[in-house]
Amino acid sequence: MKTLKDLFLDELADMYDAEHRIVKALPKMAKAATCDDLKKAIQSHLKETEGHVKKLEQIFQCFDKKAKGKTCEATVGLLKEGDEIAAEFKGSPAINAALIGAAQKVEHYEIASYGCLHEWAGLLDNQKAAGLLQQILGQEKHANEALNELAHSSLNEEALGKSNGKSSPDAVSAYGGPVNLPRRSRPVGMGRSRVLSVKR
Ligand SMILES: [Fe+2]
Image 1 (tube, protein in one colour):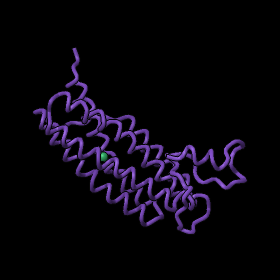
Image 2: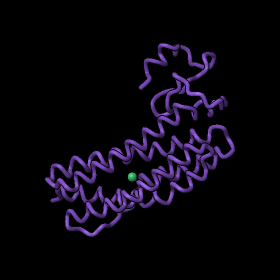
Image 3: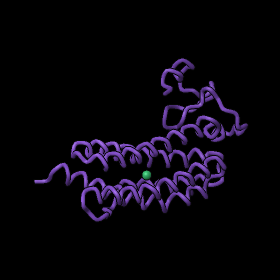
């Protein structure tokens, strides 16, 4: 009979594999970005991600296990899509928005996975593991927020071909709702109040 501990260790192995893949993918994403702030945000998260690999090794130790990975098919797929979209939008004003989209899909997967792992570590009464998972989860959430900020402040506008670098009060991340569509291109029934009502 499989137990919660088996489930925890299985998911931990999934994330150990995922983090190794992300460490390899982030430098390519930073290289593809044409916005310096986005490059810096990706490079900074690369350092954190290298730290996540080490923290995961400590978490395996908390359960007297040797660290091992199990192919994370979700991350394989998300990173493959990221590569494809980066190639497709190379040279486009939407390249940075495309990279943010790809990166946020990975972050959201990680946030969901670490959220579960953190909860399960608590249920398994392993406070040291729960503390380490809380630290990783906090950094993943922060990385996602940093990407949101960049999308809000200028990169969604840039994707629309308005690269004036000014922040727009209406600009919403591609992940938080519709971008600030010009009035003439808003779908019927999606007036200004409707746009604001779906803002996060
Ligand atoms: Fe991570």
